[in-house]
Amino acid sequence: MGVKKKRERRPRESAEARTHRKPPADGAMDVRYGDEVWQGIVAHCRSVTDREVGGVLLGELRVESGRAVLWVEGYVPALRATTGAGHVTFTGEAWAEIHREIDQKHAGASVVGWYHSHPGFGVFLSDMDVFICRNFFEQPHMTALVVDPVAGDAGSFVWHEEELVRRDAPKVLPLAKEAPATTTQRLTDAAVMMLCMIGVACVVYGWLIWTGN
Ligand SMILES: [Zn+2]
Image (cartoon, rainbow, N blue to C red; front, side):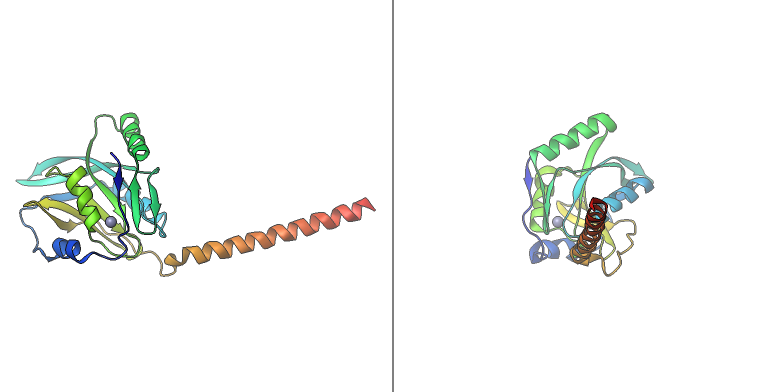
């Protein structure tokens, strides 16, 4: 199941408007996450902030006090998905790995949706996200979780009257303001490392010359 998501850096007006303009959907299903599962998903989304990451959600639909509640009790990161600044691509290889992981570690679990990060550009579903929901996670009990690890925001989008509406998700702590500057930080780290290596090389070279005499 190859799924390609193209750039979505800017919220496309149509999709964003559709997912935010709707009033709170009283009849829509709730989505809840096991504590450890939530922490794991957030940690995955926070692990990189210069590109998107994602994966699939596992769980089951239950009825609690007459309400439909989707319980997310597992997740599988799509580690082989190729990612960029504004897109995630679930390649055939990524899906194969996800299914292998489910067979090995979550035998019998059902896929109930997918998640992905929008590092620093907000919680919404782009047109391509909606396309993925409609084509691969189209069952009424399935959800799409979007996490913005930089701003500290998350929302679970669920089907309600054939539209996707946002439901609350647990809290996400925002990353420190300097977090988006990871590339600069990495360059600085690399420069410091390089200087250290040059320093060590000089010392070794000096010692060799000295002992050579
Ligand atoms: Zn997206």
